[in-house]
Length: 114
Length: 111
Image (cartoon, rainbow over all chains, first blue to last red; front, top):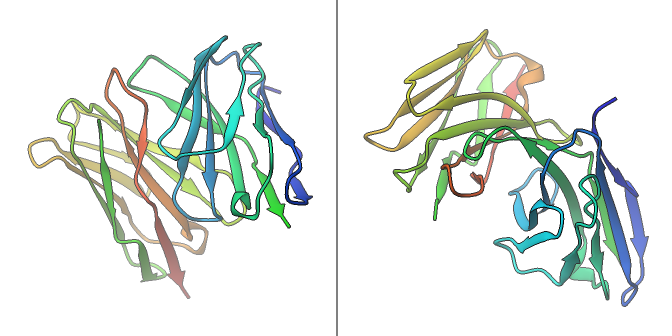
């Protein structure tokens, strides 16, 4: 079934650890996004990609990095996790022409850094 | 770039009454305005959208209106039901830029 998937769904990790949040979509979308969201609160764009080998930083300063080697995968990496990184991370992909995007969100990863 | 303001941040309405959420945008080049609904513990999902060449769009109990001159658009939910309780996000987008979300409105439907 065409969808967007995120793993892990929940992660508890200690300060200083390196983590990678996985995002994959089977819809063939070129555009992909990472948002940081405290539950039910504002969506903060932290990274986006318009295709393979294209990555850009979003509006919220983030200590994370992303890569886009394949169309379907858009992993997010935190080199050294800190308690301030505790949040929910939502991945999204979109279709349709520029300026008329429908964003399809993944189920999210809830991260707790101790 | 675009800036989207959303009001109110929290809204409580009696079941059966109507709810209205308002958004304003800054970029006159914006021409697409989607609305997303995020239920508790779930992912945001598109519920309705409107393009700048249309003034109003309806889908059953929900409708969106757009005033291009004033640069504001609104979501209207009639005959509210418990399942309408959620956080609603408006957004704006122009042809050359990424989508910009409002900060969200938490809607509570009171029994």
